Length: 62
Image (cartoon, rainbow, N blue to C red; front, side, top):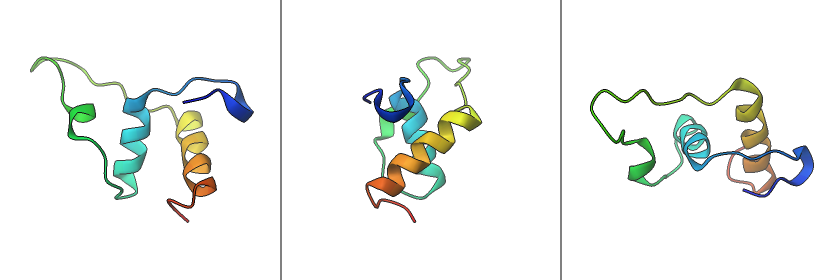
């Protein structure tokens, strides 16, 4: 994702997590861990808000 208004990078995994929270379609591979014991990072609250704002901008959520 482009750095845009907030001048930050956001991983595809974080975007997929927020899209899943809102019931939007996402690619299956973003949520699969590479190994059975792998810990999956959780999107930080501030980045979650930025992603939600972007999804509202594109009218994907209200």
